[in-house]
Image (cartoon, rainbow, N blue to C red; front, side):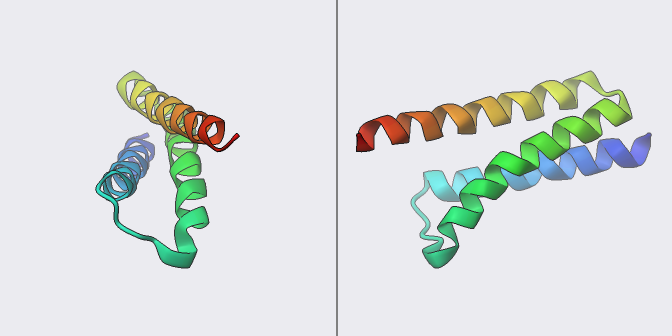
Length: 81
């Protein structure tokens, strides 16, 4: 169970690093689309691992991270229309 909690924490950490890089305007170049997709997938993976590790706080943090990036992607899609 402890390894699932560690992997879930690593997933939320990677999301935070990628999100802060995106927020500060760092250009990912041709890897921008892959960075956005990974920012969606890491919180989902972290939530799944949090469920397996039975840690409620990690589940909530990962779900909130996924909702945040989903909301931002929804807002960016509305601006282009």
